[in-house]
Image (cartoon, rainbow, N blue to C red; front, side, top):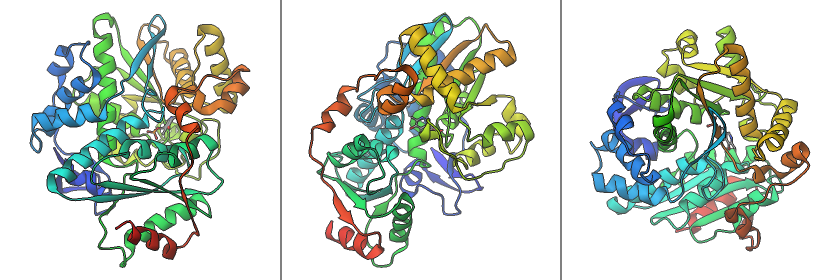
Length: 435
Ligand SMILES: *Cc1c(COP(=O)(O)O)cnc(C)c1O
């Protein structure tokens, strides 16, 4: 698959190179250059196909110019040992559960595919790599779990001492082996600064350092797959329009859905659901994009004031807010409506949702009211397991949802981390010792 920077299509590179470079040299984000028509495939694939097999079938026409069919199958089988699930809440209202992976959030799909694909390329090329990344909590655990025991790769994760939740710290620090957790005596900003400095450092220039952050095309591409999977599950029963509601922060999830649509998926509309960090809803309303510092909300994985994937969306819609509006409606949801929706969903359906998913469901209800579209089939993406946000769940419903097995088991394992002062000298020493 040829890919190029959002800022210029002059220099196309293969997907493999986009994977290892992360950011394009001109500072833009990698996007697919060609268009694909997968309509026939979307209509012909058997709904009973396991998710990994379906994924390989969808990715084959995209990646066949640089990988064999067998390689694509091997990577998909390795990455997707977990699947999405579709739950019906009522007639024409579904929740797409994306939290059955190792870190119990949808980021597992992107991280696991990226890790498996990188490891496959490195092994093939007889090379190794060191993934260096900073986390404020949640994204790091998906990355750590994804790269755990992957051949030819070490992962170094920096996190701020005392500033991640106890569960998040356990998820980062109890794996061991090729996952190295560095507890930094400082803030998340210190962690990010150190990672940046390490990438620029001459003393570290000989190390095969790579990033695995959320703008990587290798994390975005696999997120298209569960939109396609959901359509195929619903295909026979769809009588009217299909509408996806997507809880959004950096807009990677939504952008991936828009790619699936570009390749022919019959989606009538996407609902971009944000919390009070509403620069995108504001953009669609006023046609002005005004990034600003984020504000803290209960759906904290979506507290983003300058969404990194906005640049990809702009590229798709040729910088036209009107074109974007023809496919995407956006709604912003406040904290009290978030709690209320969690409560009503528990009381009405006996079903727990996390605060991010609640934002998606509330935006879906707002959309129905505004557009008077009662006939569509609505699918709300559930981005995290409700037990990951125990305090919010308890506030909303008065009870605590049960932790999934994958999270429970790490609570009893011992923490393994290295405490470091927030300076490049200390990090350099650690990295040079990795060998
Ligand atoms: C990251 C995250 C989101 C936001 O996804 P984007 O792709 O950044 O828009 C929503 N919910 C949860 C639980 C997340 O971790």
